[in-house]
Length: 287
Picture (cartoon, helix red, strand yellow):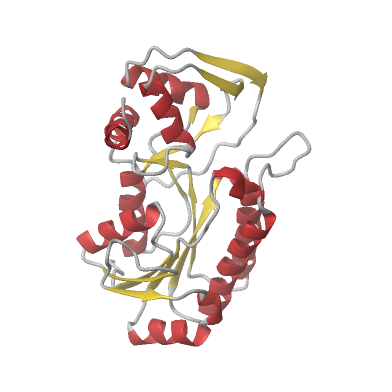
């Protein structure tokens, strides 16, 4: 059955938001957005709120007036760079996510939140390695508790390393591909044997659209099978015909293999996704 009707996206001015908005509009979904500033890509209707956690009554009115059937939380800042380790920034993200969980309780609205592989990666003491991962993990715990108390409209989607070329080049995959295209040498801190989870942004948006339209719950979106960091780098080096030298350290990062949903198979092969990303990067930089 197709449940596609009216979708409310929270936070579409980042990297993933415009991609998902465009995909849903192309799939015939009525898309409404809430952002702190006007988005470049216009949806069916856009709302601007400086701090929507203080606008509960207004959001309640939007949910009712536009018969919202699905709410997707994309409002997470500080996902890369120094902000990943800023506790105050990540706590604000936690507050936003838990506000939405409380808001939607007892409502027949499908809620989709995003987890991350980072919440699974731990150091030798068993600690999550960043405030970003720790905050994501705490939100996951909140969602699990809500689900156990009969809040069954939840979908937690765990993303791998999303890439596509139009994101900032200090994101890991784009940074690596940029250096490979420039034939710069790369030194990897780990031994390269840890699991790596690449997901092409086009696969992300099409898979999310399927989740929304068919009420799928949970799962991990990846671009192909789980591979090692070394396999990814070797594939990227080969696809880009790079002469970069890649060296590895001795630290082993043990990350668990994820559960995969059968119907979230990618539309792009990894080498194809890398080449498409490289083309986008070339448009942004001089090579």
